[in-house]
Image 1 (tube, rainbow, N blue to C red):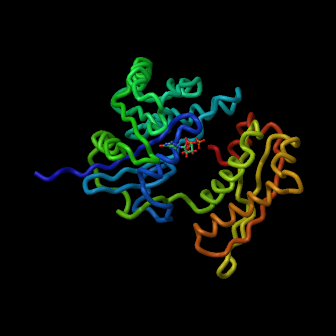
Image 2: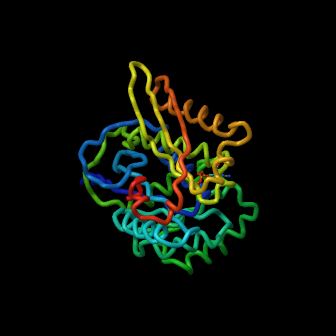
Image 3: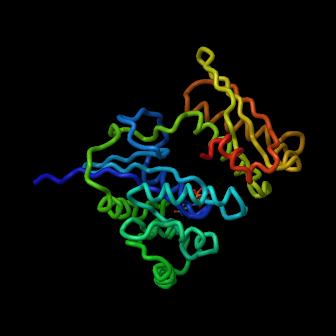
Length: 295
Ligand SMILES: Nc1nc2c(ncn2[C@@H]2O[C@H](COP(=O)(O)OP(=O)(O)OP(=O)(O)O)[C@@H](O)[C@H]2O)c(=O)[nH]1
């Protein structure tokens, strides 16, 4: 009897900086390429697709989990996260080796119980005391009924196939949803906004206490090039100088690096204009959040 094909959705969740993106990239194993999907089968935002002989793994994004702010933002985000996780087939809860914190614990009430949730211990290559691993895992499995535990290193490619095999057994039987070479179907505008956000985060993330949102306001193909206007929405006027830096140095760097990445993505010249807008109190207004694409 031939092995049935399996195909399903996988979400990677965890507090910031535990290595989720690095893990996703290591599992999917290639750069983003833009493809169209075979059929409109999901309302998830696809992050990447990996196809093996007998399985197709569709990695989806879950909206950021918020703990820092109270109010509408938190409630809405948590609702969205819980719903998104209920809809996928497998959830990878990524926790950094030896570093359990309040941020990790806050995610526990949102994780689905049962066979779905796998505990992934990340960055095991950076763990100094390997013997501490057993106690660490025991502590975590006592707090939540994970259905499997897989320690990995995305950077050193340790146990990535084991993790894929664990995921595979939990995927439902079904035909592939995407062409075999499909990597992502995220719209390019969204990726462009993410690239800008990533630059901001790298450069001034620590100094921007409420973060920011990037909205692509204009996208015009002009012959061989593309003209893009992006707006960075910040919480307070006082955050503007942080983002600008001395003599606009930060903004220049953000714009240059983001432009280079977007050019690589599109493989054509890009004219990128970025400006800053202050949206006072936006993080606590559901209407404003919807406007900005959170719903
Ligand atoms: N040593 C080591 N470092 C890693 C590994 N995976 C990720 N990192 C590092 O951990 C940091 C955070 O990794 P990301 O993949 O950006 O983490 P993330 O969870 O996606 O972060 P957010 O986008 O903030 O939620 C980066 O500096 C990575 O280089 C790993 O397997 N080993």
